[in-house]
Amino acid sequence: MQYSEGTVGRVFFLRFDDGEDFIETARSFVEEQSISHGVISFLGALHSAGLVTGPEEAVIPPVPHRETIEGGWECLGTATIYPGTDGPSLHLHATAGRGRDAVTGCLRTDCIVYLVVEAVIWEVCGIEGERIHDPFIGAALPVLCNRR
Image (cartoon, rainbow, N blue to C red; front, top):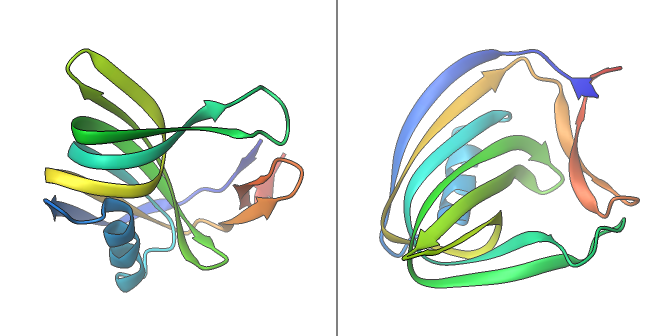
């Protein structure tokens, strides 16, 4: 386990509108506001999104199993914010449902808002850590300063 202790800084309430790319717009906002570490909670609806819903098989490194949603799905999710090699790194997970169908996974691509997505971003100050690619795991993982 690794950890880093911080305190809550600024808190932002955001509204993402129909047709916006949720991931790219959120990343741009985080960068414009110079938020290095934080948490995002969000709810609303997505017109479409590409998700990773686990591995094809439970091996390391994993081969991602991908799903796509289209046509207006209700969603609820959370994300972490860390500095990454190319600017802010957002790791977003969500559950989306339409009718009796539901899917849960890591939001990755083409995450287009349907009607509205509301979000709250809590900035966390004093955290020492960044998201770094781990070649063994095959994914970018948070690396924190205080290690056990």
